Structures are given as C-alpha cells and as structure tokens.
Length: 422
Image (cartoon, rainbow, N blue to C red; front, top):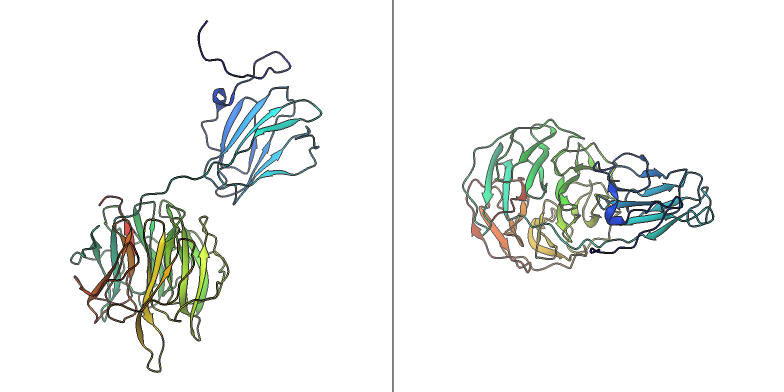
C-alpha cells in the first residue's frame, strides 16, 4: 500500500474523524448572527456587520471536529461566540461565556468526552502579511472659480496634471473625495447654494459617473480618505454649524448612514490615509478658533477621540499619503485673520499616525486646495483660484517648488487617488 499517512481521530462509534484538510467546508460564507454547526465541517465566519453565535451539536461523539475561520479579519470588531449547547467546553459548563475576538483567528475544536467536552486543538491568529497595491493616478474635481464647477483634471502616475475634462454631475465646491475599492474614488457632499449630500463615483480609468442620491447629513467643508485597504470615510464638516458625524463608504462605493461624531466638531479640516489601512483627520475650525487636533481612524473605520494638536493651528488645508510604508503629509492652509493669512508649512505624519512639528513651507502660501497620492508613493497639492500652481511631494515627504498649474485653477475641489495601473 502506498500513500501519505496522516493522523486521524477515532470517534466513539469507530468512524474515523476527518482531519482539518479533509473537513467538509461550507461553501456559503456565514454572515448571520447565529449558526448551528455540524460535526465534520468547516465554516468561514464573516463578522463584518455583527457578532456570530455558533451553537455546537448537542449530541457529540468523541472525535467530532469543527473548524471556524475569520473570513474578513473582523473578529476583533465583532467576535465569534461559542454556545456549547449543554456540553462542556474545556471542562467548563455551558453557563460560561466563550468568545474569540482576535483578527485573523481560526479555531479548531474536537470533542473529547463528557468531562472536558469540546477542546480547542488550535486557536491561532494568522498575521496579515500583505498590503494592497497603492493607487497610481489621481483626480482633482469640482470647486469654485467665481461660480461652482464640475470639471475634473486627471494626474498621471508621474505627477503630470492633464487638461480639463468636461464636468459630470452637480457643480459644487467644498466637497471631499476618497479612494475606495482599491482602485476607484468617490466625490461626496459639498455646497451648491446650500449644503448637499450627493456623491459621484469615479471608475478605475478616471471616468466620473452621474450623481448618486445623497446619504447622510448634507454638509460642506468636510474631509475624506480611504481606510481598511478598500473602503472610505467622510467626516466632520459644516451643516450650518460644525459637526463631527462620519459616513463610511463600502468597497463598492455605497455610502452609509450617519455615525455619531467622535472628537471636536469642526470644518475646514483635512484627512488622509496612513499606515496603509488607517486614516487621520486633522486641524480645522471649531466654530470659534482654528485648531491642530487630530483624530485617528482604525482599519475598521472607528474614529478615536481627540489627540492633542501638533504644529500651527489652521484650516482649509489639504493632506495626502506618501511613502512605501504609509506616511502622510498635511500642508498649506489658512491660519486666521489679523495679518496671519495663508501659510505653506507642512506637517509629516508617521506610519503610526504621529504628527511632527512644522516643516518650513515650500511653494506659494495658499488655502482651499486639494491633495492626493499618486505614483504609488508620492503626493500632489493642487492649485487654488488665483494661484495656478501645484506642488509635488517626494516619497520622502519633501515638497517641491511650484509647478505651473494645468487646467482651471479653482478653490475647494476634492482630490483622491485611483487606478492600480501606472
């Protein structure tokens, strides 16, 4: 006889139990809040939207085996809960709460006997050892030239800005934009003659789609960025007064309802991805003064409380990611009246979300422009109405001198990265 010999467990009935590799894996990913599990099966458990309570078989035999895997690496957000259904679990009765809450975890359990019941033979967490490819191109869109516009300008993977593309969707200003889906972008919210909430999706070839009916509170002077590798978040802004509400964007570009705001309500802030899968909101105007506080957003889109500000307080600035390990940069903006006015300093952000002190400004001081990542590891700050220049940012976070702008210079556009192709 030839072949590979593997270890198998005999059930009490004499039937050989399946090894993990030979389990009958369920083809349907479990997304519900409950599951009745069967022996000899494996299940992919997706807790993106809710916790999942798994009820184990009530009549278990020695050697019965079940495996659960964290499908979306979200058990740290919503856990896997085990109901041992009258049997013991690791020797403890069913009255104990058993949950697993580590991202990327898998759980392999085998039934032993009535004394110890179900025993985990492994509950390992697999490290997330890969990152999504970065966007290569960028798009600036919408804004104000003396009247609202909807024109866009594409940016190549080498940082070259293209001529105007005829606008699609409602002309507006003071909107925001973010990457989503890995290679696409979304423009959202803004101001026409009033605050609005519609959005416009951008394909991975830079084509802007027609208006999508708005979701969430209409507002302007908000910020947006991509998080979690393929999703986005809009946050903060002005509804007629400052707010801190956020709206998450799925990896298919669907905007979700309002989430109660965390941190100081403000408008005129900026946001950018950092650490490859997280977001930082920073700076802005709280309704009475300019601030430099920041709020970190984790890879699940959860906004943290205020972090004490670093650098010059200001609003109407812009931000973008750069570097191969997820650094970011805040730059330019408006410091306030009394002769303070526009500024050009920048503040670098580490891949841990730590903001550094001011870096002396390069280029023309200005406010109300957009910024986006491009070329996989670089960034670009755009022009404003009356200041027709852009500034490229190297993969080390160094801002270059002015480049003459191409296309219509305008205030308060949105900007985001798109496309995985150079």
